[in-house]
Length: 252
Image 1: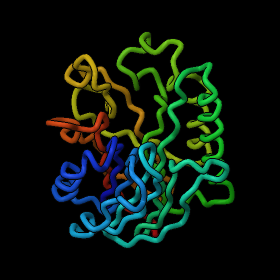
Image 2 (image 1 turned 90 degrees about the vertical axis):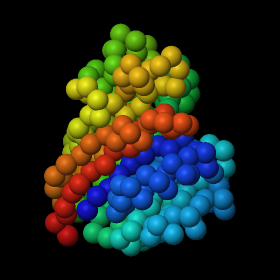
Image 3 (image 1 turned 60 degrees about the vertical axis):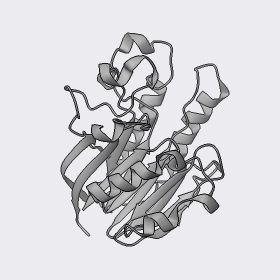
Image 4 (image 1 turned 30 degrees about the vertical axis):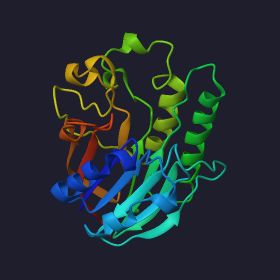
């Protein structure tokens, strides 16, 4: 089974690129983030022409997440408990439970959104309570957290910033401590698998990036390959994120 995650940074702006990418790569299930559209304007029909069922959670200009599947789609949840923003979707895609997450950015350490981000991640961890670590599942998306200093191009450039604080890293580590595995994808360039590059100052071409998009899998999943699709970040009008693709089998 081939799965993928991609922060598309507006599905309306990126739709031709997305459809072309889906046709070329052919993933069985996809988690999308930052769709920036309402459910009524989500391109269900366009995706159906490529064989994808879709679940979308969105309310307009900001946020928005989706799950696409060619192997069946059973919606399981469209809201993270206690957090009504459209940042969470969960569905069963064939044998795999797929969760698409768009974790809040946090803005700055003295901003209320930073505390909100930590609370959001804590609520995500709580959704795992009572679940079986051997159930085939993948939680993937834009976590807005770089787990280690190796996941940013220059740790000194992020001193005093969000995304790299011990509290944020521990909040993601709590998911791993429960029994999930951080799938380390092969990089598209160099020796570090960055997934995000700011649009400004040639950051992409310099490979001054961050690894903030993650795929976390349960013990019921066996990964055979994973890579950052850097080609998805190239060309005219790209998202500022690259996609991650993961080849896996399940115990189900």
